[in-house]
Image (tube, rainbow, N blue to C red; front, top):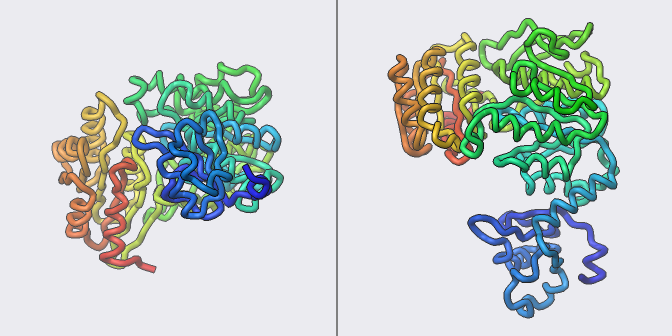
Length: 459
């Protein structure tokens, strides 16, 4: 490595060769489909500052010419990225909040970030960067792009998982002072087989909380509240609607136009009115989780309420889009699972200011052998909730649409989001409310894009 490179400050760190920008460090990872080492020359030609590589995976090293001076050789680029993140945090010494949930963890993370900004300077996971790659990439932002660790007081980090031990690895990298477990549901059940197994995997977050730290647990979820016994050396703050919850809500009212939800936030003897820019009881739960974190760091209920009321809705997670043709779209296309889909549909139905309710539901992935059953259950639940039209998109969503039809709704199925988008555009009328949701791989956001392109937004 040259002296010039050693003295350089990276603009950022990246693992996707297609998105590397000038001045960034590229970490060449070996994935299931491809190997980042194949693209090292390409990223240098696109302006990369350096590349972290495994020597044995680069062929014909001499052909790299002057780029050789910008190669950083390690045994394992993936492990090196994790180690770098761990050392950044260890030397930094600020407060860390770790968040996991089967549904809603990104929304919880964003709301926690909004609350904690009242207490200090916050760095938080971008999007859903919650894996052993994504979490370290978030942390490297503390030493790149002109930032320094001392620019931040608090880190709010999503911790996802698709196997046992994954959250344990994440808490090894970023040991949390506060750990939030939002819920245990069916997301990723393909990899675990049962909700009890998912709960065991999520409990790794509680196990990894620093001694004397705080566990924030959902009192409405039996599998979550049972985790309070795991670490007697931590303080437990519960949230939810169950009797005795430390942080709770009352007088919940959803706006008739899906524009938000009002509730009275209560913690101890304090209370304050909150208006979140999100629809549905599930998002009130997410807000309560964030409020519990605020209580944990010593904030007053009134300032927590102000922070929650001012927090913008996360992109593609319950964003209301009003079209010029009088149709209201609830864009919840970032991801989906059975619990989240049913809760979002119920939120749609509880908004009384619409003539018809339409749900566009993309296939829910990673449900394993229970996929058909769970899709059928969702279709039935959505129809029984009062949704008039249900449109399934891709694969098993055909079962969802069929089940919804059997339960009294008008069901349609399309194999692609493009086909669904055309049909939705033909169906919608002024006064309709349309929920659009689906797993990331289904790309149901194309339905939203089509509607906005055809009809324009009502500004």
